[in-house]
Image (tube, rainbow, N blue to C red; front, side, top):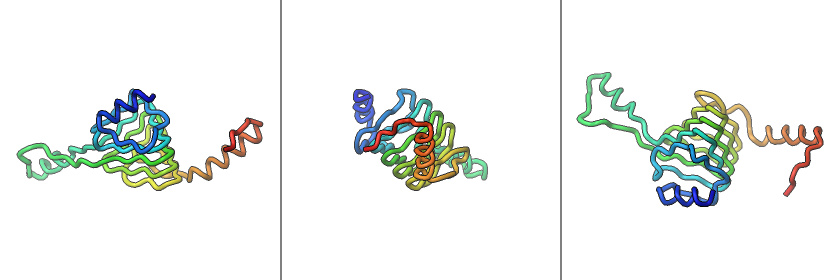
Length: 150
């Protein structure tokens, strides 16, 4: 993991702290437009998309054909302790704040506030992470599963 993190940094990904896990099968659209923070987890087949060429398509549809392709290009920021599930797509300009879970296959855009769980296409906040974590903890206690308390 350390070697892969070093490679990503060398390619331009900004890292504040150490990501916990980044799959080697993540698609980084533009390394220089991605910021990751401490304990980030990015699962397999996630796409971090920093461009959107629909601007050109839209202009052509109203007979305003540009001389070259035009795009919206926006950075993506993932906060601390963020988990991105397999196959999720993170759209241009997205900011995911701290302590967030993004469900597998979700399509996420905009600002996702801290302490959220987001699922679906389009991604919708379904709960706070802290509420869900308390339920998970209670279930683990009932099942007598040891929880590491730090």
